[in-house]
Length: 240
Image 1 (tube, rainbow, N blue to C red):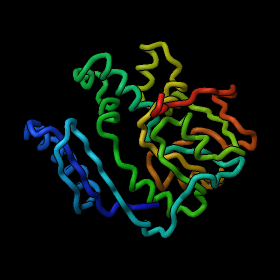
Image 2: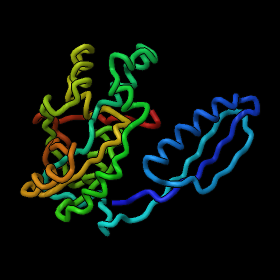
Image 3: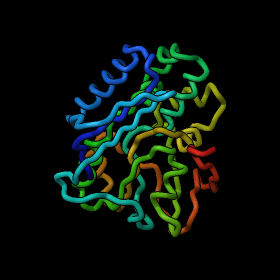
Image 4: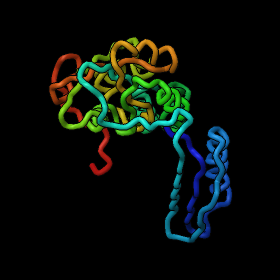
């Protein structure tokens, strides 16, 4: 339910860093800032042995007048996602295996990893649908972020229809011999949105926010089950 207002940028690096490198960084940031209509309002420059970048982005409550939080879902609620899950993980995998040329065979997966789409508009739209109970971003994979979203007393039954997964996720799973549903829930850097709402209003959510799809149901029994079986996958770990 928040919208971005502005950002600051701190840059540091070796004095001999080519100017073309910094121009490329700033061109990319400027393009993203224009997409979201937010200004660069300050920052800092310094010399250092290595390149360091620090971005601080701040925002405000959207016009809907409320923030959607974690820990608000109830048993029986539909769990939904806005965006693709597993696609960025495929992008990373093919870039590591094939290098920059992977973009020709896996264009959307590579784009999802290198330049994920903003979900600001989706978040604002969902905040305006009052029965939606909660929302958070999925950045470490659904398997890791779902327990954070639900809290310790609830669980989830996840059911992913292959038809709802991105075609490049399905194609990669087939070529690598992986289970496509597990590949999707273990992905990281998805930058999708995870939410919950009463089952009777999910059609309204689906109608008002394109790209939303159901991934399962909130359960009163702790733990995550995928396809009816207990699932122990943990998703992306920043410290592993």
